[in-house]
Length: 67
Image (tube, rainbow, N blue to C red; front, side, top):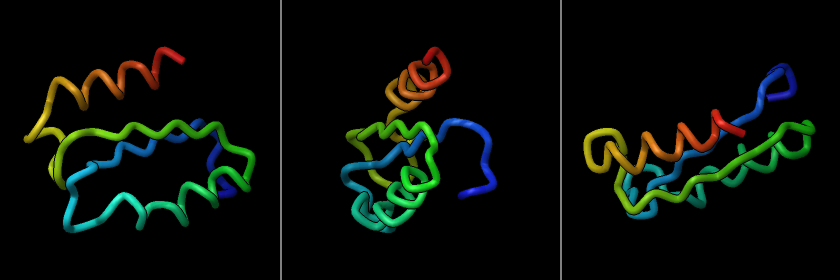
């Protein structure tokens, strides 16, 4: 994480049963500790965001890129 030179988006599926959103907290904290710009998008989906909610996922990515 320390080697990244770009902002980081975590797109987390609130209904994800394979990788629960709380499982990403270690990575989120590592990114923040490394001084990265961190944005978290909580999507109302499971593990396959692009399949389950393509418009919401695309909107989260577009919002991230616009910042």
